[in-house]
Image 1 (tube, rainbow, N blue to C red):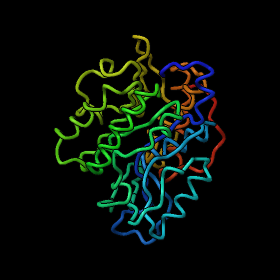
Image 2 (cartoon, rainbow, N blue to C red):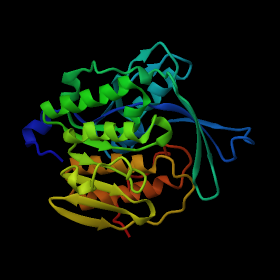
Image 3 (cartoon, helix red, strand yellow):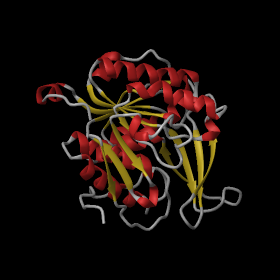
Image 4 (spheres, rainbow, N blue to C red):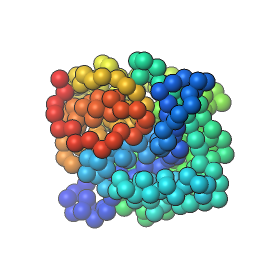
Length: 306
């Protein structure tokens, strides 16, 4: 976490700003080919993390574009109900992306997306510099980079603004092969952003193919999510392993995003990285027991990893 003085932190009115896309979610307990009933919700990796951070007490904001289709107003209302500032997620002409989830008996997911040409894909590098500068941390994602050239440019521009104003840049590569024309494009997008990154938040082995080297060589602070194996944190030249928290698995959707948001919120509240990671492991484990990207409101997880 980039160090700021107490007076500087007090002057920044937000803790975490995230830039990305959020879509309408329809999830079912059956395979999509047989499903007749779906539960409507919402999800998107950066927005999922912002919800988790807000539930830990962080002041959060979302930078995006929201389509003015029948879903748009309800999306904004739901995010505001979580305490997320949506002043820079305007309603614009267009459609919101939609995705469908079916989940097998082990909680593993199958996704079907309808997101091409979504309103959020229309993001550009024209961003409100003063707004980004008002935050302590900026959260970025490889998924945002992948959805359109404009969103990729917006991601890089936001990182540059953050660097100019002393805002910590956190980045989850979140590699999704189907979103990219080829692995080379994904690697290039990751490499172009890494010089601006203070906290790298990869999942392994999922993101291994896009990282241009060992994680500890790519950013001063790295938190590697390892699924059932827990996580590892690289900070001040040392790796620390944090054990997982056992939990029943109903749906893995959004667990890594919940981890990211909880971890960043804890760091911003003064927790040491290992303690923040233990908290994040617990929050992600609690999410696994619920379907969809956003779990119901739960008591804040405060226990240590097992």
